[in-house]
Image (tube, rainbow, N blue to C red; front, side, top):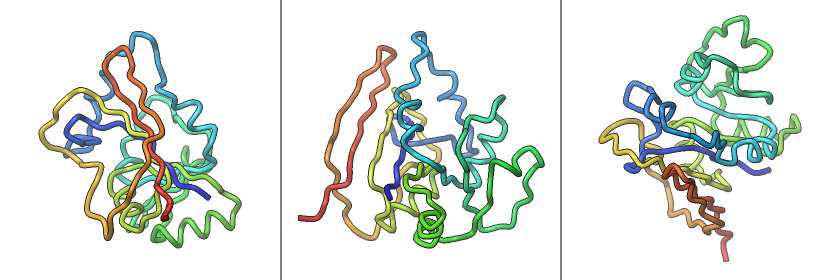
Length: 178
């Protein structure tokens, strides 16, 4: 089983504005209609684990963007709209318990999304690969991608792609202990 991050940040490391808005990301010019490797990435995972804040953002997209099961980590018992009942499950597990449960259900590769959820997985050293796309904008404040960890986590650079519209995407794999 492997846990992956595929996410975009501002140059100063924010994934969204303080209120969760990603307008700056959605309005970025993309004349080539590039998907930045997302379609290849999403084929390699079989479930998504996201936070409730990310879910609140995504559920307002014009079209539901996922074709695999979505597990929303939340500390509160949230009521799902009827249209999401067959797509989303609210879970209250900690990262280790959730990964164990999902593995027992046959989910092997998880896409971890949302600031607090990513931070909680990193704090438990439960992320295997990071694909991070830097958008050349400074927000100055917002929701950071990274937070504190309990230990140093070392990464190996796999590759970096530079796109014509100025976005830079780097792929890292967790370094195995030697």
